[in-house]
Image (cartoon, rainbow, N blue to C red; front, side, top):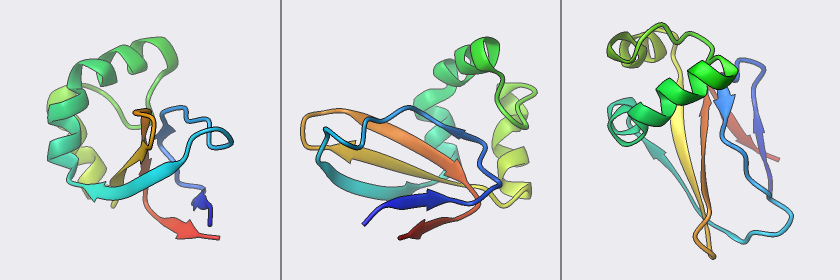
Length: 91
């Protein structure tokens, strides 16, 4: 089973899917995502540019209005990542 994000992908935080045993893929609320990763989001935007990001205060509303969702991906050895997309499909 693998994940394939639709073409409306906003950002994937890097994961090495070859070497890590994925244990959980859970959808989390956009508000939880912003609360957990707010400072990182500002840094990612500064370094890489985040699609739709203008500022942290408006990002949650922008993602919701654009029909994005957030998934947290966790591995057996403690690595984790995030998928921000409109849709994730099992392939």
